Amino acid sequence: MNKHFTWSFPVRLIAALCASAALLFAVDLTVPADEAEIYDRVIRLHVLADSDSEEDQALKLLVRDAIVEECGDLFAETSSSGEALSQIESAAERMEAIARRVLADNGSDADVRAVFGTEDYPTREYDGVVFPAGKYYSLRILLGSGQGKNWWCCLFPPMCMSSSTSPEALESVGIDTSSGKVFTGKKYRFRLKLLEWFSCFFE
Image (cartoon, rainbow, N blue to C red; front, top):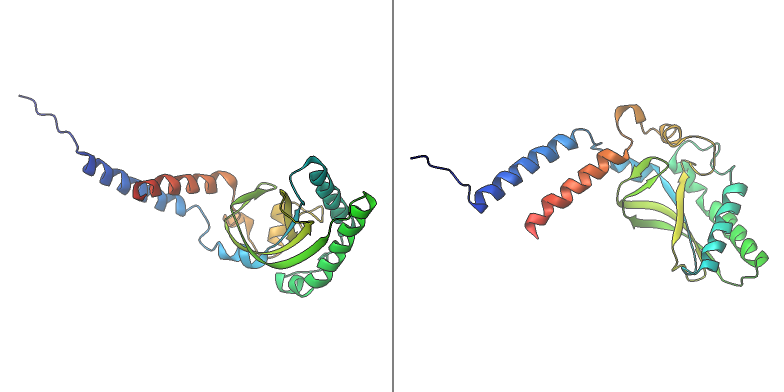
């Protein structure tokens, strides 16, 4: 008489977890282990609208366009985040003044504040590069309450302020794109999805 071996649920669960752990380890070999360097070497720029209304979002984009056009020389000769941080106060004042002018020119009397500090951000993709979730240096231009959807880019290295491609800009501050330290979307998203699936067994 043939006997059919049936795995119990606990056994199947353990096997699935072991397989997932092995796969996660294999994927980690293709993902940069020293992610911290991107947090230390990057300064983000965020322009936050007063609200999600069509008018406030349009004003946000006008402010964005003016800042990108008029601040192209920012950090042009800067080679490290340390140097950029030493210039961030003057950069913040300049962008705040631009934002105030744009709002006034378009009939808005909303307040404008430039706030610099460190902020926690979720995983986001910019120009083909995935920025992992974590705490980044961040210059935020708050229009009014700053409660609306934001536009963001990488202020340093100046990905949105120069004609350089994202890999070129990252390489300029010591992030070696040829060795896999750039967080390409497919690898990182797959890793996040696997971690998400793996963690559901423990909820």
